[in-house]
Length: 242
Image 1 (cartoon, rainbow, N blue to C red):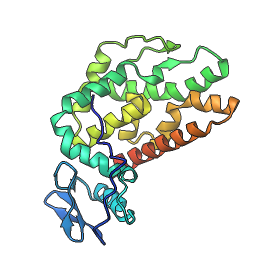
Image 2 (image 1 turned 120 degrees about the vertical axis):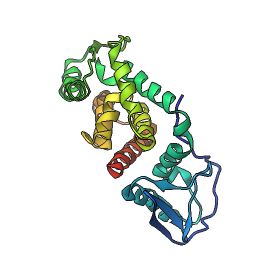
Image 3 (image 1 turned 180 degrees about the vertical axis):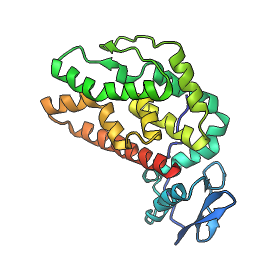
């Protein structure tokens, strides 16, 4: 399965740089630490395709304290994945996005209660209609959680769309599909139809509904906050690529 590079929670290197800058390098933009090029864990030069993306990554390096905390550098980790891993696994990444399209979370509506179903229809149907019109897709809607196969052409078309992206956009798309449980929402953020946080809100309509009814659990709050932060990063990632 295609996955983003993950930080080692036990790894705490000391910060060894004072200044972080961004400079052009051919058609790319390099992140420099005290004037020297930064590199990914895999040894790739940290060269990004747009200045905005390089500045997004550079801001994470600037924000580090005495020790480097990789978990606080999500855009840097996405960049490392795009540079070190994605070129070798493009087919697998596209397959993963297509798999989410084949069981897209937005296609599975609640059977009850009626007010939850109404809430899902109000926000999910516009996104499904958008994806169908934007990409020429077709989605089968289902009631409940029992899997219903999508038309064969849907995952095939989604896979083609994913493979048509560059390594940086494909990396974000695959991460987004897993984060939201939805290829539709991942494409909506990639196409800037939704913000990362807006897509996250749509991905957890039922969870929000249950929280309103039964209250919040402390562990769930922490989990949700972490996932929302990832969603915000994804929105910034795609905005910086535009």
